[in-house]
Length: 340
Image (cartoon, rainbow, N blue to C red; front, side, top):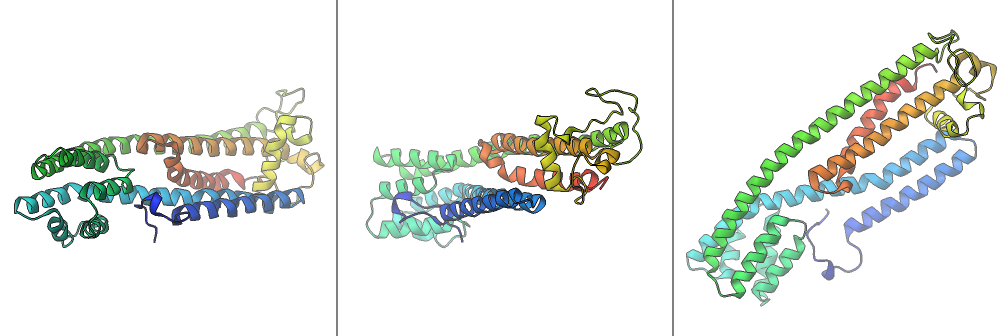
């Protein structure tokens, strides 16, 4: 099981979290390299699939760990005000600091119980109270609520203030701050939900654009499209062969079409008679272009959602891991295999 709340200076070597992320990056890099080799060897679809798998292997563990860590921090913050109130009650009843923490060990505070037990053990070993709480603060370095509370408590202790009243005040402030944060999070969730809706609408619009293009240009069928009498790039029929090799910027899109199977696997060349008849060159270009737009939009939307929700674009990995697979499946089912 992953342990998120540890002091870095007390750890020997890399943490389990770092090992998993590093291992996933190494495994992903190996798969990407293997995919590139397969692609160069002529196995475009297999190589492309391995390459994509490598990217997923590199990113997915980080997204899962980030999600679990944020959830663990929220669980600790939820119980922290109750713990402080109980600690203040114990102090008011005449207990010492050690006795107060010993009593707190008997109450269920969820993930916070392990921290309370560690604090109690350190106090019984003779470690000074300020140092113990400072260590606890360092373990909770990603929680603004706990960091602020411990800082106030230590300042009061060092200045000789009334610890009981300080604990009560901190507990009330922590509870109020938590309520403010929850209210803010509820509003943020609404904004993130809107971003999901907008992205799914973008998926629908993208699919609609391809169907419109296929009808206008006659993509994937031997007949002419609605724009058969309109000239494009010096040619007629409304469907230029982007993948004939004459348009350099279109070649990456043509290769992407082979990787994802946007054109028949039996197609040997985009300049063949069959490719010209069914306009596979134009079909490959437009499918790949719209597919790339969806993927880039999913990554960017996820990054923005992460920045809004948790203050970091890297936290948007979990949003991207929801958006991109949905977009991929919808596009492949509605567009990717059509005309093959």
